[in-house]
Length: 121
Image 1 (tube, rainbow, N blue to C red):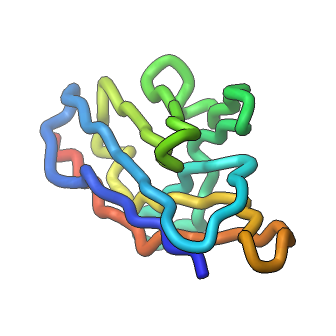
Image 2: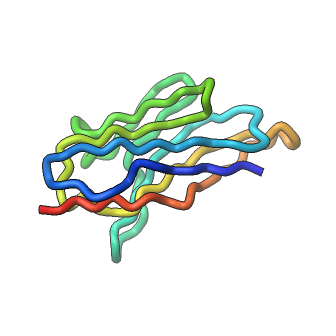
Image 3: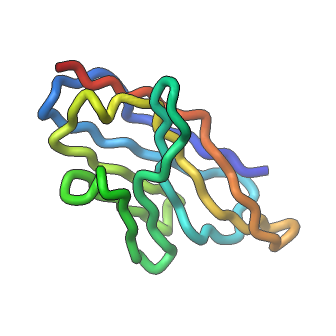
């Protein structure tokens, strides 16, 4: 089994910064793409940023220039540095990863439990 655990959420004022971290643990053989999604109240979950195992990144238009995704393959971790936050960034942020387990060597998609980010105006 694989677990994704997010940390780093909280309350911040508009214009401030937060850094989210996600640690993958369990029966891991390899991790391919890792992603951050978010879901605001009353809205659909949306992709914020993604990073491949080789370090290629992709961002939602709303995140470009403000957010940076990075990963540490040796530690099975992915971070999201968020700068210039606005109230529109308020949401639950979820870590997501494509993981091959040691037992099956089959890639499956996993989700974390989410961490709340609240940006006050």
